[in-house]
Amino acid sequence: MTPSATSRIAVVTGASSGIGAATARRLAAEGYRVVVTARRKDRIEALAEEIEAAGHSAMAYQLDVTDRAAVDEFATAFKTIGVLVNNAGGALGLDPVATGDPADWRRMYETNVIGTLNLTQALLPKLVASGDGTVVVVSSTAGHGTYEGGGGYVAAKHGSHVLAETLRLEIVGQPVRVVEVAPGMVRTEEFALTRFGGDEERAAKVYQGVAEPLTADDVADTIAWAVTRPAHVNIDLLVVRPRAQASNTKVHREQ
Ligand code: 8X3
Image (cartoon, rainbow, N blue to C red; front, side, top):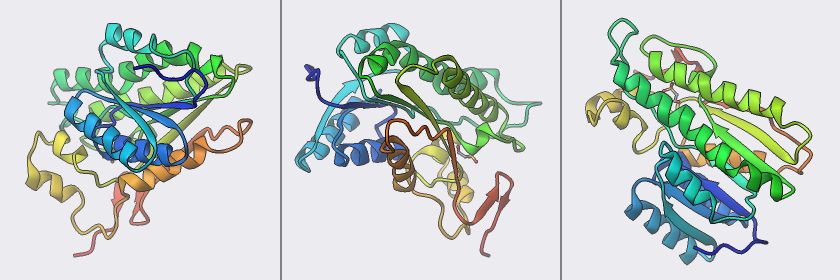
């Protein structure tokens, strides 16, 4: 991988599906040279090929965001980076605090928080070096309010939110913006399936009767809007929900 030092590079984590893949497609269409990362090599390679076939620029890099040594190695490939989209993460289970599996809580903290920390720490010097960098943290409405069964995921997403807020305070004065995008109910190929360990019936119930949950493209659109504002405009936080969802616990379902 030999990215040009002058091109505007956008790194997207968790790009193998859902919001990450949609964001990569969209930022490529906006003119970024996108680097799509995820653990599943076949998927990110196919995505990079698809983006290239559409006349844009993309490359795939297999990466587990929780593997710090691998993240540090990845960072050495770049002199400068324009945009980092910390999207990798997800939910495991919907168990109450009383019975939730500590291993699930740990795993969610690792992917949603430490993964974002790893990428952000490793790439921050490259974002600064670009003279106009943007860190995007894809958190969740679960980072702003709790719900029954949310437990470990809510705790982890509050962690992502705090990471973004704290980083913005600490690097003020440097040429890097910190943007948090907090999506509510988004119907993606895998989010609910992963949460319920592949149980398709339980996953389908999440969206049952909801007229139009957000799509990955809706969230990609929001991210692209924030990223493409003029460099002096920092969109601190965007909370994005479908019209049918008034809060984490108030969703309109048609019978
Ligand atoms: C996804 C939103 O409601 O499943 O981040 O926590 S929710």
